[in-house]
Image (cartoon, rainbow over all chains, first blue to last red; front, side, top):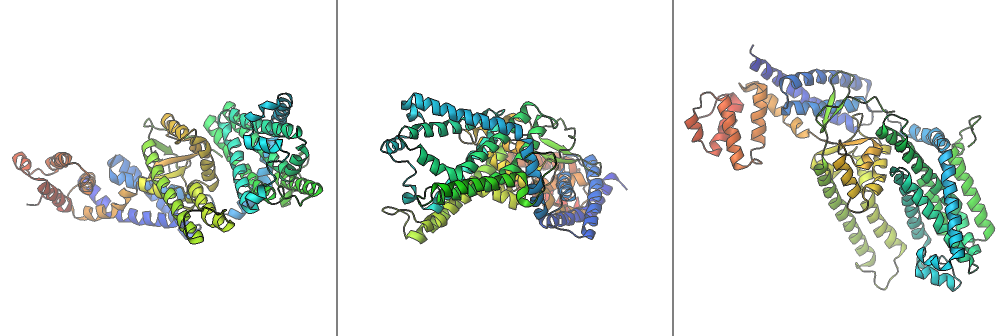
Length: 329
Length: 256
């Protein structure tokens, strides 16, 4: 038989099979589970496709037939290497073991980021205490006017916006800030440090400015219920961002790209928990913090209790994980 | 875990993934053009959907589009504003996860996302890819992302680097033509390569420019149909060339 005849016969017999395999592959791709028979048939088909593709690459390089086979083969490769679906177990594992392990690995950057935040806060305080006029660099004229007349800018907030809307707005903003603190680590950690320092500076200047008008107590009263967790989460996101920067400066898992990718995947899990905690913060900031009905002690209890919930979630104890001997968390 | 990297071919637009069968999986990486095209389509879809939702909800709640003289109510915020913002800002992560690395725009541009292992990216990877839009969209018009796709060898934006995803071309069009090719192979006298070539030219006939159509069809007929003399070929019009190619495809013998 001539080569033209054999290639034509090969195409005539195999093309319908490839088309059926393409449809089977698409059907299996859309399904979460496959039976043992289906899995074994898929493996057989995968091997058959590999043989056909090798032939096509040799006999028909650059042809549409080879391109089609490449596509079906890639789809089968993805099917064969698909991780098992067990979302519930994966989520439980993430919250119980993976996130606590990530938090433990971030202890050192967390310490440095918290120090940076505190020092920036102190710098902001000193700056405004020494040069009060510089507050115009950090606050809007409307805010300055309100404080100068003896009122905090947060006082009438509930008269303008309902608590539920306020909560959504606040937690969306906080989630974006945390995500940005993490992502800015791509600039070798400098972006993260800038964001953390800026947030610390703003807090310090706000306290120094309100203190000049005797409103610092009221500001503390406002911040207490939600601020403990909110600021901790921002520092945690900053620590994750600095780890991301370090993965680029000093790659330890393969090359720079691989190291960065692995670090980002770890930080993504932490960001999920941070997002959930920030939703809680937003709800407290929308419903509790601006409400004058809540006394100082209630705010303190809410703030401290929520901080302990955060600590338990970060260490895995919230989900019944036992403490690992020898690991302080 | 990241597997040991597979040696990559010299062609920067091809990405090779090692397979257990010993036959590597080769995918074609999408460039900045296809990426931008998909994004522009998606951007229009999400903007129009968000606007449509907002306008319909606002009309139903207020009876008018304006809020003049009113403070926005909770119903208005939660039924009109928040869903519209959710549609606009969460379009990419939600659809990419639901459609396993595809969006309507990517589908129309003929591209999809894959993990570096060749499979569909995980939900976590897709979320990370989208969180990094915060950096990619800086300072405006996705400038950072655009520069990253220009300078990276695999045309990756920073979100792709962080998530370990690749944007590759879908080659579904070729798969769809397989049935037809199989049926043609059963009756045609042409070998598989010529069959594939003629079929491809006929499938793209209307997309080709007039001059190109004549040149390609003439060149194919000259090679495949020995009975056709040069003066006769030169005298054939476009439709005649097409019917000759069709006849060649179906029987291997030129029509008269």
